[in-house]
Length: 102
Image (tube, rainbow, N blue to C red; front, side, top):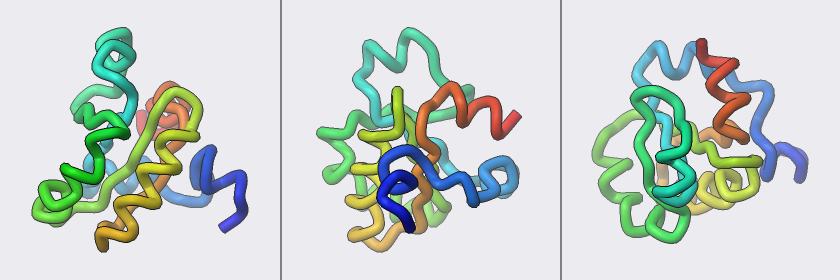
């Protein structure tokens, strides 16, 4: 994985297929950012809380797609969740991810 895909999203993943098969979309922006617009059915877990919620996400037993404003925070969240043993993909910017999964 290249350094840019680490921070700005993995363009090779089939995000639409992942969502269709039950993947969770986790938006790691602040609650205020999330309230200003987000992907339908996504859940908001701010980056500073993602480590504390890793066990919850793992217990769901579903792949996770992270997103944020630009892809930087979602890349960091992806790394944290991978260490926790979760199948996770960095979806990058939430608005671009929304276009990919529609």
